Length: 228
Ligand code: B1M
Image (tube, rainbow, N blue to C red):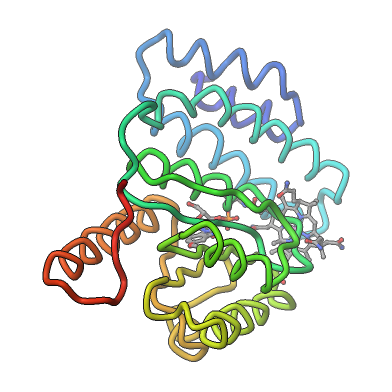
């Protein structure tokens, strides 16, 4: 069994400590952090997801696997995220109201940070009002909403509506994602950007912040980059 398969296996069995040790060993053996993330940790989580769907495993097993996933990614974080560089912008991120899934949101956060974006993590079960108040009060250029449940994704529409009502829509871009979210849904609720995975979310966020800086240079009032 390869070390990536071992990581996946141990994650599925919820062996958080073993996962952490294996991730460290894989790094020592020279494997790329991104490869360990995708082919070890995420692939294990995908298998658990499939088993959960087919009623082969249940909430407790999924919970311990999720914990192992988060502990494994914690080892990779310092490598994937460049510390100490000047931020290119600021985002707030959270999983929407009623939704407790945080693995995808944590990955998006990590990828944003790896692109030099400062991130305020609001956690899970975040009320639309909190997203908007944070963006307004803490001068965020991006609001990033994650949802994993079809029953909670509607809360993203409320974030867009409240941002409009708060008068910050011109300077804040709203990004949405998560398994049930689609481009069509993003268009329907009037959010700015939908991306299907964490790396694309980081690319899109960096592009938005670059565009904001250009707008600022041209002396326009709208969406601007912070970098101060
Ligand atoms: Co839940 N759960 N869960 N669960 N869970 C799903 C989502 C489900 C699809 C499983 C299934 O039935 N097949 C299903 C949802 C069905 C639906 O609505 N269509 C489901 C359900 C029903 C539930 C409960 C209702 C179960 C119950 O209690 N009976 C319950 C709800 C609790 C709640 O939130 N109120 C529940 C609970 C849980 C656990 C607590 C046990 C656990 C979460 C633990 C945790 O997160 N700390 C859990 C898990 C782990 C899952 C599965 C198995 C895995 C989700 C995951 O972490 N995937 C999931 C099945 C599945 O997805 N196959 C399932 C890995 C992660 C990396 O992917 O989050 O999609 P994901 O993130 C991706 C992209 O979506 C994207 O980037 C990431 C990859 O790069 N992305 C963004 C995410 N956010 C983004 C934001 C962006 C851009 C991209 O821009 C801002």
